[in-house]
Length: 460
Ligand code: C2O
Ligand code: CU
Image 1 (spheres, rainbow, N blue to C red):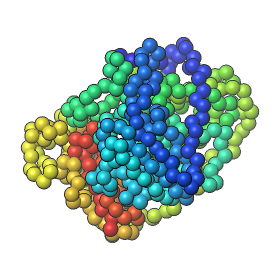
Image 2 (image 1 turned 120 degrees about the vertical axis):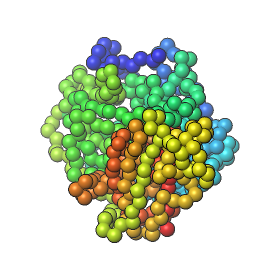
Image 3 (image 1 turned 90 degrees about the horizontal axis):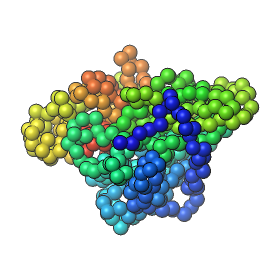
Image 4 (image 1 turned 120 degrees about the horizontal axis):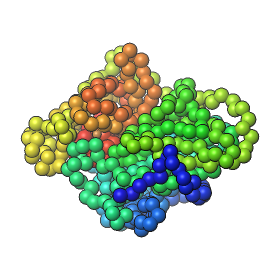
């Protein structure tokens, strides 16, 4: 129903609306309030009415929370929506009790109730926060926002720009389409939207100057869409993935893949000329679209110093030898199905699971919540070999600790908290169990998680 401006035929220049910098919440001693409540916003293209949403503090995305590495985040989350909720601080090396997972780390926050989140921010980087209760619906309706932790010695840039990407499925009337529990979405690629947003807008635009050095923080908050992105008029280096600095910056590839929940930090020099536009492009089946537009005005265009690595976060070296190991077999979904699996402690056949809306199993268990996939002592290294025996991609996210991929040659990949697994792939991750608690390991295609794709690891 809703069409987007074609990138290649951008006849109408992006509306010159420059996003006023959102008021970040500055840190001081008083706890602040973050209120989940109904609000409305014009997210559908002109001609459609405003859309009813659930948001934090009345804005989509929620307020940009910006702190300094080493600060404490203290926020009272007030639940003014008609469902229980919770907030997960995605990617933060957090105290387990503050991780925001109902049924695992806290009781859900009932409507009308408040929960005081209070935790340290030990790592710098690009993170985000989102509802972790009925998330298929609550994240879709808008309960998410950026969480930025600055390095005390951050690289100097002319602008630090958060690009929070999302897609949302609207119906013909411009409202968030129901239902949220469609068996089709749950058993296929998840809930893919028909309106693509950057920072809550279909035509996000921000003015820059020729020669500016930008820090672009890309975050994928979509329920299930895997964004394939490109750059135009920007000369960019990737400096961090999922919040964690790369040991050495790498030139941005032609196509950048951003799975649900993943982040990429770029340092990008504006090489487009005065009067031109630079772009972040979103490649879809039918072409390229402007995901973000940067109208360029006159600037210095002076040669810039090479991009250097971000200061590293505290390190938890991974020792593969003698590691504790587990395997994780991912099964189910359309095309393959489940012949049967354990669900709520009972053996159920595929048909009865489908009737209950359950389509996925990890190691033959649907939505494991009682016994962990693996238990490790603090400081041990854990290796998990994962096999995707389904016809769909999955964005596997581990809470509480970042992992590295163990590559085929035994070398370790960059630290990440979410790994995109293509159909048929077998990959292995490893991490040091440095954070005690029960940590969810689940697919961030939110309909998949709701349909059984979750387990957890225990660090004691
Ligand atoms: Cu982004 Cu289980 O979370
Ligand atoms: Cu999945």
